[in-house]
Length: 220
Image (cartoon, rainbow, N blue to C red; front, side, top):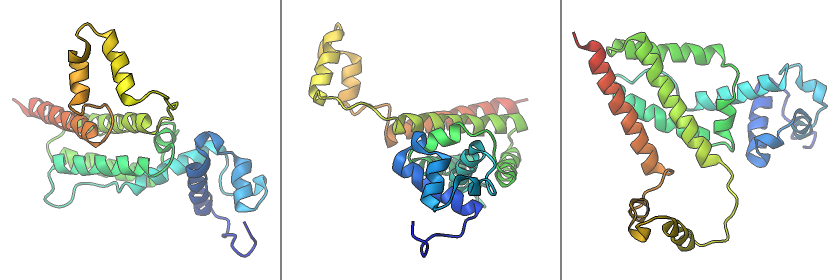
């Protein structure tokens, strides 16, 4: 990076540059030395702003989470619609960066600002009739689902030389009913464990289950 274009070194600059570097080389390729080189400085200069690499990774994860737009439901918005919007925004934020789900899943801690926003979300759910523990478990379950789903979406898979039809034929050969097996019928109908439709199905299942749990908790 040239002297004329080098940004002023700050914590914000470190985090934003590290996220751009991860997009280029992946999480495994991110090192403090590589980040320093990208910024045009020596590695010790970074430690004025970030004490350890884990602190850097935590700050990157925090930035991804906040980019999804945390906070309580909008005025008049049902908790179901809010949770759906929150889940889609969170997934999009994870997908916006290479290895975004790995970054967040391995975070050791979050910033005070993120923790305060999380508490506001829990308080809003309590206002909708949730108990504090049900509110915590609801958001926790959704977060774990989204993290796991995106981890699979972002996993690097080895290239296969076989055509999709060849792979299906190989699966059919393993099953007693062959091409009429339930698994093959589901695949032909567009069944997949990944993609938008699969994500929405899992999310609806979580929300419907939460509604049932909320009804049970409020029953006399």
